Image (cartoon, rainbow, N blue to C red; front, top):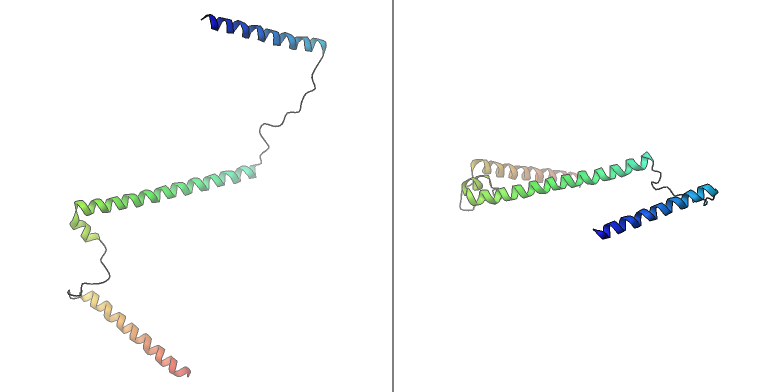
Length: 137
């Protein structure tokens, strides 16, 4: 407690001495030449501010979009894994089928129709290529 009182008295005496010295300078009209102060806040035009804000907005929007997409990927991956472990029938129903059918299994009606259409299109393509190839020579 005594240290605080001593510090208070020293601070009060120093403040009194600084004020009395400044009063003496004013009384004698003795002034130090004023030093031009540099501007603390530089001049900033609206165009610069607009560019800075657009730049920040772009980065914030990109960050938000990336975080949302990352979250969606994480959620879908974890959901698929959870459904695969807990509900295997539902998972197998919604899982993608391989392009290669089982050779022992007979192809379905739709699959046969698609394969036949592909073969017919290939034949027509070859026929047109052959006919036009012969006419040019």
